[in-house]
Length: 291
Ligand code: SAM
Image (cartoon, rainbow, N blue to C red; front, side, top):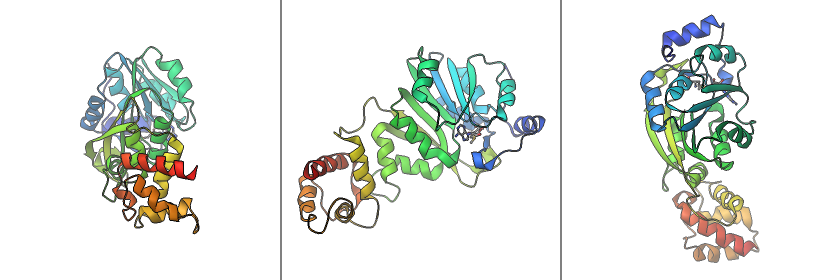
């Protein structure tokens, strides 16, 4: 078993040895605190029968801890320069491998087929590159991969939006998209000081327990999410006004009040007060009326 990578000294030594200057543009803020790593790994509830997909292994600090618990770890790293270094740091872990690629371009269905067909349960565990947090999470969810958990370090403010309940200013289309597919839980808030180099924002570890089936039943998912988006375009306006702009003309908007009432929604409410169930009802009534 190898020495733990997650310390400022070991990380800096590795970067120096491989003459690597970190790239801000790739969100390269490396975690150097063993306690935070432990919290991430333990909340993923791993054992040797489970697989893990990691996004952005960096120098392998998290990969190493995942490999100690899981039956298999596959990590996707975009920065080619890190591959020789990772070969060195992960040498003692035969069931951990690194694939060079861009997570947003990788064919994940094929990757799951190839890498995880022997595993009943697979989770994504990662300290994400922050410049693409939301696209990564939406890709994982929309592809409906057979995931147990997504445990990720992300910006604190994004974690609050993902886990927000109706009624507040953090609640929006991201909250609904994430909660449609998952049950979110903020595991811990993380200060900037545990990274090399320090990011500009505070972070949080969030655990998304992926639902077996979506939280609400909708006939047309694309239209459901479109209605949600439209309802938040102007947050300070009523649901009536936002939907009128999106779906009606001066001549046709007379129907909208009746549609909202049929869905059990007071037209003067704002989008941020509607629950996911209410959005499901609303999109179904609206779809029927628009034909
Ligand atoms: N896992 C390491 C840790 O915890 O210290 C590094 C985390 S660092 C925040 C994000 C990592 O994601 C970097 O290694 C970066 O090169 C990588 N990365 C950035 N964009 C990526 C992409 N599109 N696909 C795959 N990896 C990416």
